[in-house]
Length: 284
Image (cartoon, rainbow, N blue to C red; front, top):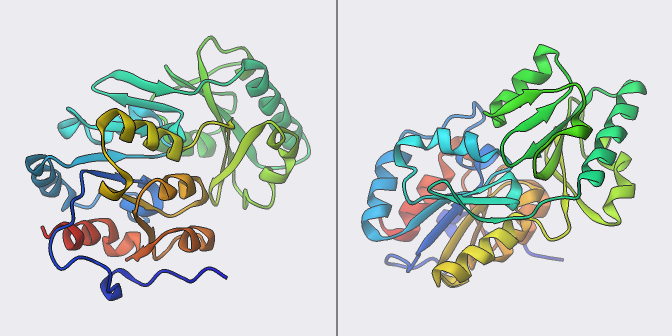
């Protein structure tokens, strides 16, 4: 049995002085953001200090690149955005890496969603392209959820016929996605990843696509080691990137599997856990 990481403030292995951290990567929802989806006010002066010290801060999220870039618009210069669960990595508007899906697979997922809807499941597909996200559902409750994560989205008649490079298909399930929608996608799990990214979201991506793959590529490009990398996550789509950093932190509110996988435990997202941990480890 894997031991549960000790909470941050009780970890004897934390350095007495600042650690040599060159890269900080954090998930957004349930991690950096509180439950009201707010960025903590203290992040902005911290980012200025990290930049002064030469530490790169990188949001890593299931959210769309356009959404992330908008959230960090005032400080986005030089920042690397690991978007769409690692399938699209961008810096200063330039693509660093991507992992596109076969269009026929994306179409198959969309048709599966249509069958679930016909059976009474409250679910909808978001076909995520490099330029925009595409949806068929037009009800306000669904679109309000889409707008939270996809600043660039379009309502189309047929999501199986979009003209874009598809990098992911996300499913929004009003119930518990881990127990309803995810099992219905079992046929795709034989060749692709079916990842439960939160209570209500499931992502279908290429087998090679995840936040960890994107992070390792970024580390190689920048010459940064896992020992110089700090990572924060809370849900199952964060597991691989936790493996890519020696300073891996699960939030106190994290999924049990994330807590088991991380080396350390940070305070919860509602207790400003990311900022408190960075301050402690870097001596800010």
